[in-house]
Image (cartoon, rainbow, N blue to C red):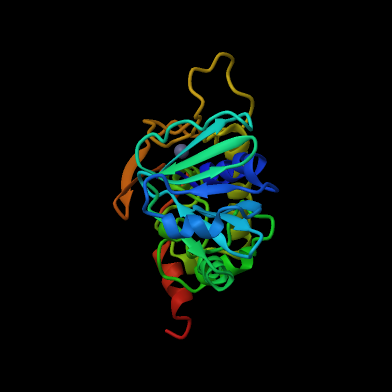
Amino acid sequence: MPEGHTIHRAARDQRKMLAGQVLAVSSPQGRFELGAAQLDGQRCEEVEAYGKHLLYRFESGEALHIHLGLFGRFRKSKRKPDAPLPDPRGAVRVRLVSDSHAVDINGPAICELLEPAGIERLTARIGPDVLRPDAEPARAFARIAKSRAPIGRLIMDQSVMAGIGNIYRTEILWRQGLHPDLPGRALSPEAFERLWEDAAALLAIGVKRNAIITVDGAPPSRSRYRERVNIFGKESCPACEGPVERIEIDGRRAFLCETCQPAPDVSVALKKVSPAA
Ligand SMILES: [Zn+2]
C-alpha cells in the first residue's frame, strides 16, 4: 500500500505531464470505456491528491478519481507528438495522453468518473491531509479530542487525518514521544499541533525525495539505502539504545520504544473521560 507521500508525488509529477493540456483518454482494457469517452478531448485542469486519492480535474467540472489500492500502478512515458503510442502493457484501465506524455493506470482499486457533487462528497469524507496547504488540522483534532481510540489508530484513520501511512505512523509517534495506546482524548492540543507539524514536514520531505526519511540531519555519505528511519524495523532505539518493541496495530506492523514513548497513565486518561466520577 503506497503511503500518502507517494500519491502526492505522483500528483506532482503528473501535473507537469498533463495539466493545462487537452487529453486523449481511453480504456485499452475496456473496463472504463464510458468514463473515458466522457473525458476524452477535454482539457485537464489539475491533478491533485487528497490523502491516497488522486483527482484529475477536467474543464467540465468532472474528475477522474483514482485510488491505487494494493495492486494499482502508474506507468508514465514521454512521447513525441507524432510518434505512435507504446502498446498497453497488461490490463491498462485508463490511458491519459497529452502532447508530451502518456500515463497508463493499471489495476486501481477505484477508477471512476465523478461529477462535481461526487467530488465534494469524496473530499468531505477524507480527513484533512497533512500535505495540503488548504487542510484544516482543527477538523482532525476535533475528532481525536473526543475519541477513546488509541492515537496509533487515529492518526492512520484516513477519515480523521489523511496522509500518514504505516511506516510514518511508527516514526512520528516515536519522534513525538507518544505511546501508540494513548487515547485520543488524552492528547493535548499542543501535542497534536506538534504531531501535525512533524507529519507535514516529514511527508513533504518524502514527496521531494520520493523516499521515507524520518532521520534528522544530512545523509551519511554513499548511503546504500534511500529510506532512512529511526525505529521502524530496527532492533534498538537510536535515542536511548534500549530495545525496540514490535507490536501490531489493526493487523499492521508497528514499533515502539517504551522508554522514549512511556505507556499512557490510564488513570489520568480515565479521569479526563469522566470528570464527574
Ligand atoms: Zn528509546
